[in-house]
Image (cartoon, rainbow, N blue to C red; front, top):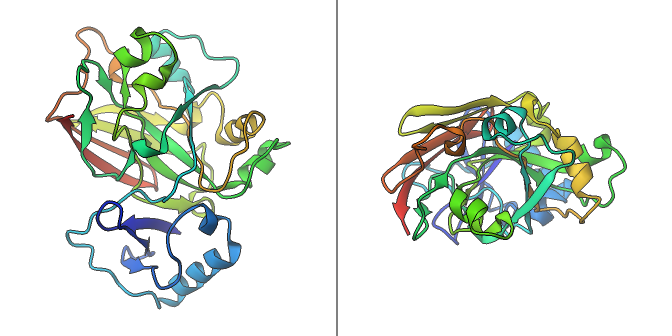
Length: 285
C-alpha cells in the first residue's frame, strides 16, 4: 500500500494512493498515519480490504498539499557514510561499523515544501536517502530477518546537510543536520510487502534539472536489515521511528572546487524507485 497524508501543515488527513493512482480518503477508517497504526495489524487489514473493495471515498488531488507520510515521528536515526561510492568520493574510509547520528523530528517537512538555507550558510548540500519506517518494536534484534520483520515500510528522505556546520564547526555532525526543514519526507510510506528487496532500488537526485546522484541501494555498506539489527543493539526502535540509511555518490561535497552548494532559488528533485518523487525550492531562512 501507498499511505500518505494530505492537507495544510498541521492539519493533514490520512489517505491512500490506490493501484490506479487515485487518491482515497482514509479519515473514516483511521485517525492518522502514525506509529500506533503501523503496529496495528487489524487496522492495516481494514485499510487493505477497503482499498481492494474500492469503497474508500475519492479525494480531489488538485491543489492539495502532500505532507509528510508519517505523523508524530518518535526519533530519526541517521546512518552516515553508508555507500561505497559516497565514501570514495569524499575520500573517507568505509566505516567498520555503522556511523550513527540523529535528526530531530521537527526537521521533517512535506516532500514538496520549501527548504530553508540557514542564515550564514555557504555549504548547504543535498542527499537522497532511503528512509526505513519502523512498525514493530526492535530491541536487541537477534538477526537480520528479525530486524526486517520490524520494518513497516519505506519512503524517500532528503537528508539536507550544511557541511561547514557539520564538519568545520567542531563537535558532532548534528549542527549541520538539524536546521529547520532539513528532512523532507515522502510523498508516500510504501509498505514493505510492496517494496520487496530494499537492496535493489535506484535513487536519483537532480539540481536545477541536472542529474547529480544516480545510485542504487545495492551499494550500501550496511544493508537495511543489518542497519536495523545494529541500531537495535544500542537503542530501542519503536513504531513510528525512522532510519535514514545514507546517500550514494554525487553530493556537492564530493565535487571539485568550487563546489556547487545550494543557494536560494535552486530547485532539487529526487526520486527512489517505487517510492515517489520530491521537489523543493530553496529559499533563505
